[in-house]
Structures are given as C-alpha cells and as structure tokens.
Amino acid sequence: MMCDASEMLAAALEQMDGIIAGSKAMNYTNGLFDCQSPTSPFLGSLRVLHLLEDLRAALDLMDPEEKESLRSQVSETTAEGLMEWLQSRLVGDLVYQERLSRLESEKECLVLQLSVLTDQVEVQGEKIRDLDSSLEEHHMKLNATEELLQQELLSRSALETEKLELLTEVSSLKLKLAAAEGDCRESEVRSTCLHHHHYIDFYNPCIRMKRSQSTSDDLDDSPESAFRRGGVRATAGPRLGWSRDPQRSNNKYIHPFSRWSKEQVCEWLQNQGLDLYVNQAQQWISSGQTLLKASQHDLEKDMGIRHPLHRKKLQLALQSLGSEEDDAMGKLDYNWVTRWLDDIGLPQYKSQFDEGRVDGRMLHYMTVDDLLGLKVGSVLHHLSIKRAIQVLRINCYDPSCLRRRPTENNPTPAEICQWTNHRVMEWLRSVDLAEYAPNLRGSGVHGGLMVLEPRFNVETMALLLNIPPNKTLLRRHLATNLHLLIGSEAQRLKQEYLENPDYTVLTATAKVKPRRLSFGSFGTLRRKRQEEMEEYVCPMDVQMPQSSSFNKGLCAYEDSLDQLEQVWTIPLTRMPCS
Image (cartoon, rainbow, N blue to C red; front, side, top):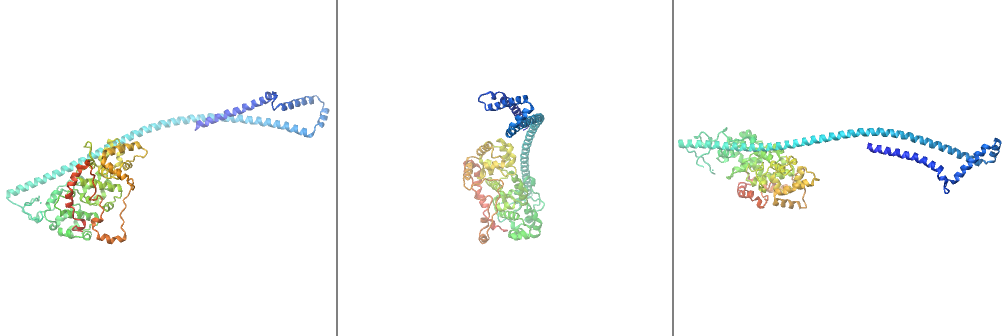
C-alpha cells in the first residue's frame, strides 16, 4: 500500500510539471506563432495591440494640453472599457503568478513527503521480510511438533493394544491355573476316597451324578454340610474381566435351588455380582425357595433391590438355573462386559454398565429402555451395541472371539465382524489414514457395525473421522478401501438402504427418542405379554447376511440356534420371581 501511495504522488508531481510547462508554452505560442497565421482567430487582437502601441507612442509625443484635449474627445464608455480591460489583465497576471508560486511550493512539499514515504516503505519492507522468515520458522516447528505428536499417538495405541493382549493372556493363564488346581484337588479327593473305600452319594432329582464333585476336604460331611463359606474359588480378579470360575462354582450347587441354604444363596448372589444385597438377604431369605416365590415388590421392599437392572439380572439368573444346557452367556460376568465396552469403542459407558451389573446374559436380553436407563442416548451407539451383541451370538458368546491385532491375511467379512475398535484403527493406519485414526476413539465403530449395519456407510465413516467434504480425493480413497474390506454383499445391502426415500445420514449427534405411551393404551398393554412389549436392542430374529463369505461364522451360529431356543424358551413374564 505504501508503494502505491508513492507512485500516485510521483504521478501527481509529473502532472503538475506538465501543467506549468504547458502554460508557458501556450503563452509563448499565443504571442509568437498563432498570431502570425492569416487564419488565426487572434489576428484582430494583434491589430488592437498595434493600435495601442501607436496610441502610446503618439501620446508620448503630445503635450499635456493636447493630451487633455484628446481625452475630452474620448467618450466615457470607451475610457471605462479600456480601464476595466487593463485592470483585469493586471489582476489575471497577478493571480497566475500567485497560483504558479503556490504550485511550486506544493511540489516541494510533495517531494519531501515522497522521500519520507520511500523511507517508510523500506522500513516496512524490512519488517515484512523478517516476519516472513519468522513465519516460515514457526511453520517448520509446527510440522515437527505434529510429526512427534503423531508418532506419540501411534506408540500409545500400540502400547494399549499390547496391554490388552497381555491382559488377555494373563486372564487365560489364570483360568488355566485355576482349572489345573481344581483338577489336582479332585484327583486328590478321588484317591483319598478310593483309599478309604468311601463313596459320597448326593440326592438330586434332576441330574450331572454317583459321586460328588465337591472340593470339600471333609468327605464324611452330610450333603447339607458339604458347602462351606470361605472355600477356595478360582478368580482372576475384576481387572482381568473375570470374577469367578463358573464351572467350579456351578459344581458346588448340585441341589435344586429351592433346597439351597441361606449361606448358599448369599454366596450365589455374591458370585452374580449382587453382593450389595447380601446383608439384606441374610436377614430375609431362609432358603432358595424364598427367592423363587418373591415378587418384584418383595425384592424391592425386603431386599432393597431398587435398581431395575439388578432385579432383571436376578430374574435372568434364576431362570438360567432351570436349564440343563450349558449357559455360555452366563460365563460373561459384568467385569467382562466393561472390558467388552473398550473393545467395541464405547468406554465412556463403563461406569453405568458396571453400576448396573450388566453381564452377558443381560446383553442377550438388553432392551432399548435398558440402554436409555444406562444413559446411552445416541442412535449410533445403540446400533453399535446391537451389532456387537449380534457378533457375540454368531460366535456363541465366546469370550475370546474379538480380534485386537492384525493377524489375518485377506480377511473375510465374518472375520472382519470380530474386529475391535482398536483393530479398525490399525486398518486405517494400513490404508494411509493414520492421522484420522484417533478420531474413532469413543465412537463405537467396530467390525460388526461396519459389516452388519446397513445404515453405516462411507458418509458416516467420513463424518466420524472428521474428513472435510471438500477433500473429495481423500473420501474417494476411504470409500474404495472400505468397499474392498466389507465385501460386495454388505455393500449391496448398504446401497439398498441408501436408495430408500426415507434415508437419513447416520451421525453421532442423532438421539434415540423414548417411546411414549398414550393414556388409552394401558388396558391393551395389560393384556399383552411382556416379551411382546419389550423392544430388544438386538432382536432375536435379526436377519443375518446370506453371502457365502459369511458361511464360516454363520455355521457356528446356526448350529447353536436350537440350543439357544431351548435355553430361553421360558418368557420373562413366567419367571419364578416375577
């Protein structure tokens, strides 16, 4: 801007010089050249000037008396006109000279200002060059800092993944050690029994037996005294996701639940994660039959179970006792579920799930109202939990079915369904999207959501990764790699949903609207069964992909459908304690 001002000032000075020079040239031209042209408009004026010169010369030769007489002969009008003309000529010359002098002074001032502005422009130019060099230096430092931050994030992610793997290995080793200890004790008991020729028979009208599998050291005790508080239980600690060994604990309860003693029921409640109510149970429960006959009001009033999920947990646990099938989902306790939330990318809900004592069996029967009670209000997070439960059903609630590290080559969609949130971030790094991978933390994105959910598409993935819409090449790169990953069958389902006229983009801000019941519908609701009213997060009849690429995972799922139906045929409304 300073350079533009100096150039305009120089142009103004040149224009003023031209005006002054043009004025002088015009005067010279009017006085010398134009008047000598026979066609000049100034020819009459020249004759007037000659006449005036002749008049002046004649007047100089005259005496004063002759001049006075000649003056009396000139009319007053002519004399006044000559006087006005002469005076205007003198005033014009004075004004012109004054104007010329003023322009000369203004020119000097402008030259001085131009020199000052030139110096200022040079100073500002130096400052601009210094600022440019400083800005470039800061850009270099910023890029170096971003690179260090990215490396730190990658290293932390790798360390977290290794930590989870180590915890898994430690947990499995603990379980193996506990199983080995149980086998060792059982072999010792058997050898002792054979040595003394003792056989322990327990009365059980239902079942798993001719000899007891109890681990009690006192082999001469009666069946009622076979149970002792404070006995050895296989645990791997809450931190590792297991609070008990279900197989060993189930072996201790061989009588029907109605014949269990107060101590047995209290320890069973503690194993179920309901140790908060053990004190009330010791004062109120006389045997297992007390719980079987208890109503919802009794549980809330006499045992103080005011948390609705705790009552539901107790109902489902009592229902599972009546089944002769292996309860695979019952082995996943609430500590394992809190770790499962880390795997599916929803660690922000760990405290709510831990407070609700949500275990694998409760996940299987999780409803929309249950999730809203756990403060899970996002539509995306509901779908994430829905598809994660579906993956657990496909894998028969195998606690080690999820994959956290890249161990497979050219994975099938069935294997991708087992990817955790950390594994998805590793995949983003492998396709040159490492700078966007940390944005998936806490998003609920896992392999099952990517493959099984038709509403989850490239647009949703790009929004969660914070890839701007103007970066079309980057979004196209993401779309290409995602389509190659999930396969043609899953992409076809997503495209069909995308072409639906009611389609809306799945975002992290969309909230689940609670179901509102009208006043007139209460009479109808009372006549319905409870399972018809409940809306499961993952319905029992949810459709599965039929592509051949899913065959590996679906075979195990379909083989276990009959078992699951046999285990869960008793509706919730017919539970003993409802």
